[in-house]
Image (tube, rainbow, N blue to C red):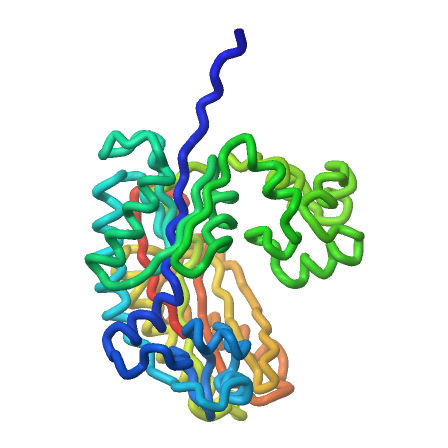
Length: 360
């Protein structure tokens, strides 16, 4: 007799239009209306959009001007991160009643490993259903869930029946499920890679599966092996409750475009100070400083420098960022500046746990 194969039972919970849904919950006048969190019809970028706004093509990372063009009745509200964190803590408290193996990806989504769980329930699908029901009853928001044997498939499945739905992909269904997907639905395959795959005649998971490991490595380098494995349902990454941050960043979008490096240096000083506060709060330092510049035409450029020692000091962060800023002249006015630090000492200090605040 062949030994019985034991599979992990992984749930990916993803809140539905989280920021926008919180705003609609807290302000009933906004319910049922097209809503964008962040940005404005004059300035800024959309952080999140309600489902009513998404029907008009409004999406996160879209400029407020474009969002308003798509949906003239769009309502803009300022983000309230403290409120989103408060709600997120309530939701995570529910997660931990079922398992300690909870890996948050952001305020509004997380992986749960319920292979062994506190309720003694053998059905991951029923656990996901119960969690979603409790989130709705106790918090007032809807969530979607994907359930499968690994994080990759569960992540894709959670988007399958959105909003307020769930999808289970059983072990024997994994390969067929992936074969039938459009390649752009694969988690981690962005627009650029999708276009490259389309150009190579790879439109579905089945097309991807037909390509040899050598072919994929030739065209996608190190990612080729990853693509070869995931389309076969091979993804062994465990749910990690204490995810180690790979970078810490601070950035700002400005009300008016900056045309002078002098003004940019003033802004970078403030950004470096914010970054220093975050680094010192968690006793983190790093070696690689990256300057992010978003121009008025929305193109984004990054420049990096790796130092021979770890830093977290505002002065050193600022001096390095200034050096990167003056590497070449600005071709356009600048709407956003950011500084990030990676190559962190968290790779050494594995016990450090970091919850980043994302700037929009």
